[in-house]
Image (tube, rainbow, N blue to C red; front, side, top):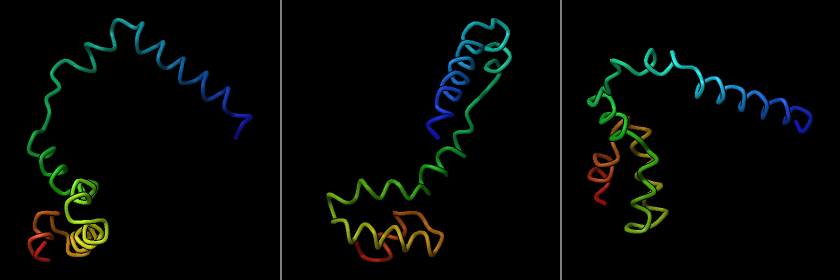
Length: 86
């Protein structure tokens, strides 16, 4: 892995140089792009990583149970916490 680090760094730096110096890329890539706010909201609500915000309030073990329940039952964290009475 250490042998490839210089090559990876070189490629990252080269990609950054290309993206920042090319005048045509930003308008082509960015113009007309709109965020799908419904999809973003759905992903955010269903993200199990948000359970870390519950840990200080309900404790790590309970937050873990909520996350596992939500994952097993394909629900949101809110629905899982309410179902478990947390």
